[in-house]
Image (cartoon, rainbow, N blue to C red; front, side, top):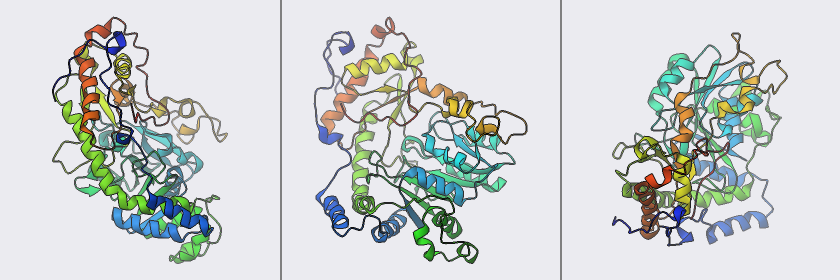
Length: 444
């Protein structure tokens, strides 16, 4: 890419680097006439709360993913809750999860009477560090939640080996990584169960909804029992059928069929859309290869591991290569250039008062360590705690529009080239960036 002549940083009075505007590069989800017709078909026959379209969607999703079973839920959070119950999480158990994630990856454990143990992440993938997971497994561990964070697959082989060695279950939270591959195989097919969010901001966007996937018939049927009372007639395992008829979880988790209808159409469109996103995001990072201070958050090329839909794309930031410039000041300069950057990704959950101090269920001490005979959990998560100052959000390009992507890459190069001009005004105010939810820059 030819370097763009500049008249100085926009933050300091120069002209912004990003000038081309094209909403089509960022628009998401893409609503088609086929989607609209599918939704109207459900509406006109009053079938919003039926299950026929949903069951078709489940069968198609399972076939696409490569699992025996898929069970649709009204949210990804519900799918995670059901998955935890289905693999046996209950009172007094512990669930190991990264702290660097959206809260739904772990908080459903509280509703089952279990506690959360946080493990650190690897600095390059931002996913669970298997070595720290191995240190955190204890006698109360029932499940490990492997989050494929910001679309990057977790290192599943060692995580599955740890689970096998200790007799615990693995739940993949693939809500960020629809269609991503780990060593050539689709994420969501490694653990004992997997959960996907399908809300309108995700890379596979159907409006609102979630999907549980598994190869294990017992896990599938326990999830049906938990929140799908209207489908108990499909149960095959005798010991589970004996107590069927009412939802074991006391919840109603079925997906409404407007989402199912959109999901069926989206599933057919998604592989081609995913290919366009992949081409666009890889082009962006290829243009920045070798630029000091920034690194792509993506698997090595040729590894057979891919990012799929690139949900919540982020970059690694290396302040030591830019004179110690804080990520907050770096992002402030990028925003002035027309590049919608934010410092950090998710804030580490273990630092939130809900996990530090709150006694949710009246146990007499904070819920997260209510069952620990030895007292409070001591978190040692140095990599996770450093992430807010060493990551930044980048635009989520949906189409490989070269002119738009080149100008955004030029904005990064410009800020890097002029970084010394930013040091004098660097108050380091936004180093603790990120949010408790997910916040994704999508457009200029």
